Image (cartoon, rainbow, N blue to C red; front, side):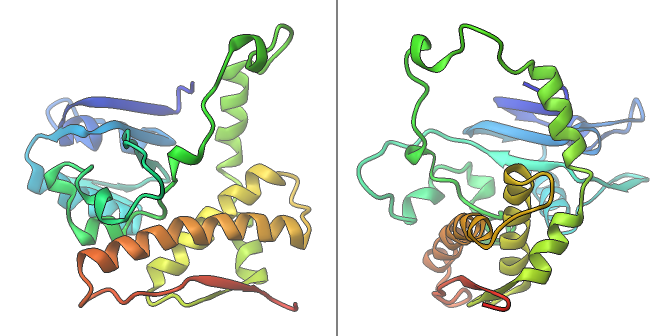
Length: 237
């Protein structure tokens, strides 16, 4: 729905396509997009997996990319999508086997900010009910709004000033929760005025999404990742 995003639906992805094409000396998707989506992630394959995973983990941790002599930074987001057969609440051990073997690495999973339980999101139903018969959003216009909102960084400052993260064992837990919360707050209150109730809404979602990652890591490597309970406190309350 946006020029600023790129979707890979399975298949093989190379460092030249994703980061930098050295032969043609042109940037790949990460340096030029707002978001790169790996759809049907179990079917994604990397050309030279060891190199690709190393570069992905470096970018996810620092926001910096490097290939050959080309180095830089990018605010590009990465999203990994997959279909999951739903039967009640999903145990975290099932998540690992959704990923390609190259991604079944706790260091990679720890760099994911959150896990969105897609099975809880209602499907779009009948077009007569869900689609407008009148004016709707022009997608190119709407995507430009989203692109411009990404440049507003003060929302992270709002979260820093208003919130204390409780239960985090690493700075990655704190960064993940704050980034998710600041993004949600930006969508909910783009004008920058928000109430404590609106702040609680975004913080509840952000801590839930990161909690799933924390539980997943503990299941994979209980000796390295303690079982933690993430929560937060609104300053001054």
